Image 1 (tube, rainbow, N blue to C red):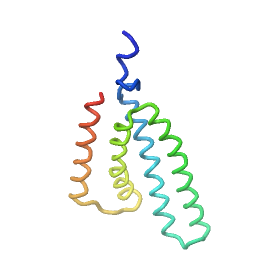
Image 2 (image 1 turned 60 degrees about the vertical axis):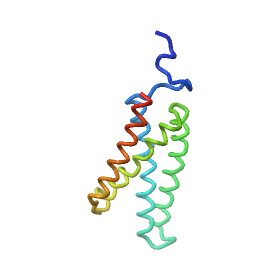
Image 3 (image 1 turned 120 degrees about the horizontal axis):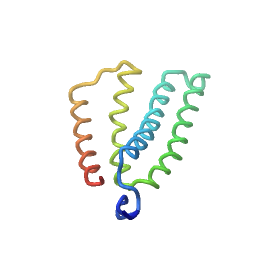
Image 4 (image 1 turned 120 degrees about the vertical axis):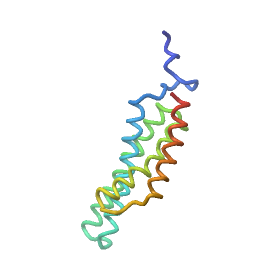
Length: 126
């Protein structure tokens, strides 16, 4: 078996569960910046906690930027960005779990439509 059998035409590895999990880790990191942003908005501007949360947000975005560059070296751009759409799902999860917000049936249906699109893109890449 030669090396090109496990690669796509661009020379990058075929999409695997490991690569999908690595992409999701990056997306989760990205959505953590949204958590920090919401926490920042709950404090008076320039207060200590406002600065702490804002710093955490910038830190999350910085780490995400470096991490995401490593991901797109290993995965086709179209696949990486299609899977990045799962940020909607993770943001909804954080809204419910951390902020006790409510989601609607329309929210769930929207996420299911997004997942269907991601599955179509991933199926073609596998």
